[in-house]
Amino acid sequence: MRHPQLVVLEADGWVGRQLGELTAEHRWVVRNPRTPAAALAFARDARPTVLVVRVEPGDETPEPFALVADAHRVRPDVPVVAVSDVKLPDADRAAWAALLLDLGARYVLFPPLTKSVLEDVVSGLMAGAVRRHGGGEVRPDVLDSADDEVPD
Image 1 (cartoon, rainbow, N blue to C red):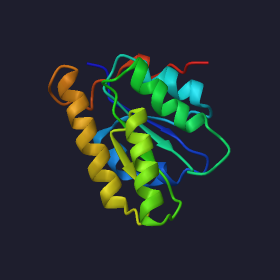
Image 2: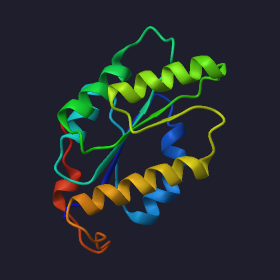
Image 3: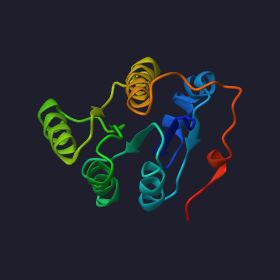
């Protein structure tokens, strides 16, 4: 089985930093695409994958929301975690969470967001993805040359 991958689409690297220890410990391939199209290309890869998308409710940029929907349509077995750092009133947070869940997100996380919550969500989803792709844990001493491929 190919190494599991974590695909993180975000502008500032905060999510990636929060998950750095977890990804290093499990030796997951970490992808930090610059565009939603590149993130979707990584998500199409036939390996255990978790996609984390940073969303900004109320922003004029719909691309992250479209990515959540596209990833769910193209690879419904790839869990999508939508993460926002925007503090919203309870009613607005519930409405945005409902929208993102309807688009296909498996989890929607809003502040207050701790490193341990993010790690627990991602590690649980990755464990399920690994089981769906053939079971056992990937041996860390086995390298996969396909891990170095980057879509355009």
